[in-house]
Image 1 (cartoon, helix red, strand yellow):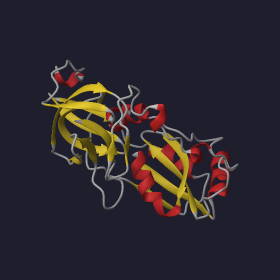
Image 2 (tube, one colour):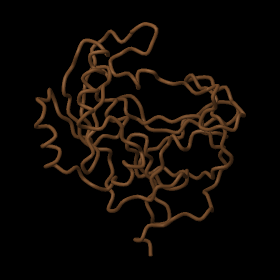
Image 3 (cartoon, rainbow, N blue to C red):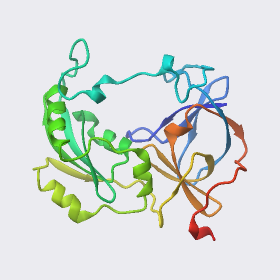
Length: 252
């Protein structure tokens, strides 16, 4: 068995899950609160390709994807000067400011109809819809301007380190005072943590929830947080891992 992908559950019709190929078909290993995961991670190699119905395996050692199966989304690097042969983002785009506890604020853009989903995909705690413009080029130009003040990238380890903390309301309100938002949002991911989780890559434990692509598990009295992208490509063996894991101070 191999983990060949994941779903964050950010869409209205989706539920978070790991996508597992058992050699015959790809199934969804659901990640609902209370679900038990009992897998040991084996070797890791390229996850190949999966189009939603058919998985094509790849034995190359690079993970999660080898050079052949790595696709670069050029729009992520765009600052208003199109990197494609022809600009094709001719639809309304939203510019947003996302808050990650306690005081990391990220500017971003997405197609207007995907705004709510995009914010949940990233695991934002709060957000503000700053503006909507008629195409991606204008949106990227505005994003680049705002990125002179606010970051346009937040790494997953940064999110994990403060997963137990609330947003600094005073700092958030100060950030918003620079704009006239069209709307604001607060997100509830269905779990609260008493202390920061231990960052580990594992697929064993009781599911507490997911926030963006971060999977939160409880095992042996310790709460762990795993970036689901770091699981992609691993071969799985049934049965909980017996490897030594770092424990939180609260377990002693």
